[in-house]
Amino acid sequence: DLFLRHLGPAAPATLSALNQKCTTIYSQGKLPEAESALIDGLSLARRSLGASHPTTLALMQSLGDVYERQGKAKASEQIRLSTYELVSNKIGTNHPDTVEALDKLVSSYTTRGALDLAYPLSEKAIAILTAKLGPEHPDTLRATTTYTIILARLGRSEEAERRNTRAVEICRRVFGLEGAITQVFMNSLANNYMELGRFAQAQALYAETLDLKTRTLGPSNPTTLITMMNLATSYVRQRKYPQAEELYIKTLDLRRKQLGPEHPSTLVTTSALAATYNRQSKFAQAETLFRQLIDVQRRVQGPAHPATLDSLRGLGKALLGLENHTAAQTLYTELLPLQIRGLGADHDTSLDVMSELAGLYLSQSAFTKAEPLLVQVLETSRRKLPAKHTDISDAALDLAELYLKSGNLENAARLAQQAADASPDARQSEVVRTWIEDNLKKSAPNL
Image (cartoon, rainbow, N blue to C red; front, side, top):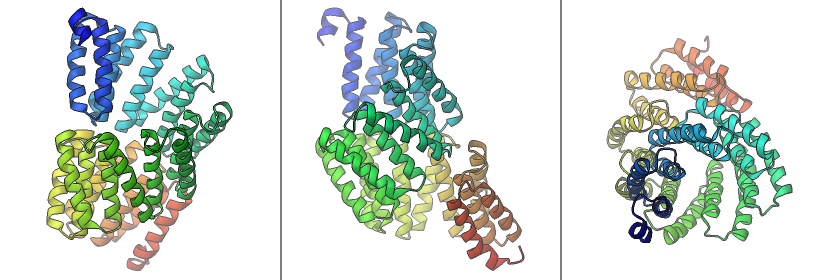
């Protein structure tokens, strides 16, 4: 207000103060309010300072962050691409500010699932930072975390694990166990263990990281609570649902007190707890919590926000558990076009919703409705992913299941073979082999 009164709305100092104010509003979870203020400030900055002024670029970066947090992937990607182009044209591709803008763009591509675009740019960022700052500089190591996420999502989890293991060794030597970046890579390595199905190792490393963060940052620190959530997730993957539920309840209580009931992080924890109720067949509790959550999400985040749509999926599963198939089918039928409109038909979550709706049709023997959905999931997965990937194998197996149930045994055998061919490791190969032994060989031993 002081800057506004004494310098005017278009002064660089006023606009910088506006950016700081929006960052504070953003951290409080008031995303629509922050978005509106940033759009107005950015328009003013472009007119008064020019598109390439540092204050204008800072406002663009902040707006990109707000878009991404609200699940507006395309808007975030567009503004981050514009920012990167403006910064690189102004100060060159190797400047630290340009690399920071590049890293933000990579994050947007990764969030959208555009790994073909994210991967080469992430490699480029690491190469620039390594050449300018060295492989052990914190900025180089931070860029490596994004790169390992991309590797894991491309199905190259073992390579991601090797890089993260090396990074943890560097960080422990250079920054010590209590260094913030050391703990970032310990968490990232635990994430790789999760990707590789080594859940007990992930649990142990998450627990170690949580202990470190609790001692160095405090039990209520946001990054401490993120690790607490990750530890709970490792329990979920090991089917240790009571332990996961206990941690989610603890995290939710802390976040409600610290951030308020409508903060995005509080909503994420509420969703995780509701999903854990589903997994324990506590469907009535899950339905109640999901309905409460969706009411808040629609008001605070919007009806088409990815988190809102994910909660709708959770509600659908609760309705199925309660054997309310009519309500579940209605919900999934309404959800799928919203999902495709928000994230695109190729997004992983859109494909999950297609598979779930197809499963609902399949349970009703509505084969002609289920088949095109499962075919689309398989074709999209093949286009997006390496030839040997668990998602492709699973999609082929789902389609084989449809053909088996509809009596098309020849196609069932063909798809089961494709599932086997796409298996990336022994674990998935065993899943396919077991399905063939339990289903196909009993129905069609000659095939």
